Image (tube, rainbow, N blue to C red):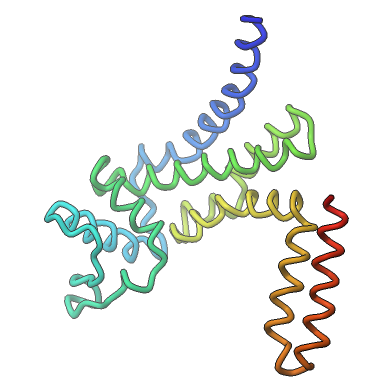
Length: 212
C-alpha cells in the first residue's frame, strides 16, 4: 500500500516537474541576457510598478495610473482586466522590476503546460499527455509573445484555454441546455417569446434527461 501511494505521488509530481523544467529553460535566456523589451513591455511594466508602489503605500485597490501618457495619467486600472497586473505587481514586489517579467513569463508557460496536461489526460495516455503539456508550454506563439510581443495579459489568458476546452467537452450537455435558455432571452423579442422559450425549455429538458 505504501509503495502504491508513493508511485501515485510520483506519477502526479513528475510530469508537473518536467513541465516546470521546460518552462524554466524557455525563459532562461531572458534571465541571463535581460528582458526582450517587446511591443507591450513598457505598458505592462509601468502598470506593475505603479500598482506595487500603491500597495506599499497601503492602497490595495488602485484605479488611477499617474505615470501613464507622459505624466498626464489615465484610469487604466479601472478597465484593464485585473488578474495580469495584480500578478505582475506581486511578482515585482518579490523579484524586483527586472525579475518580474521573467517570473511572469515562466509562470504563465508553466501553468499553461499544466492545464494542457490536465486536458490531454482526459483523451491520451500518460506519456502522450505529458508531451502535449510540454509542447503547449513552449508552443511557437507563446514563445513569440514572451520574446517579441510581451503581451502579458494574452500570455496569461492562454493558461485558461485548455481548461475551458476541458470543461466544454466534459459538460457539453449542460452547456447546450444553458445556451438554449440564453438564446431564448436574446431572440425572444424578435421571434415571439412564447415559441422560443418553449423550444429552449424542451432543449433544457432533453439535455437533463440525457444527463440522467
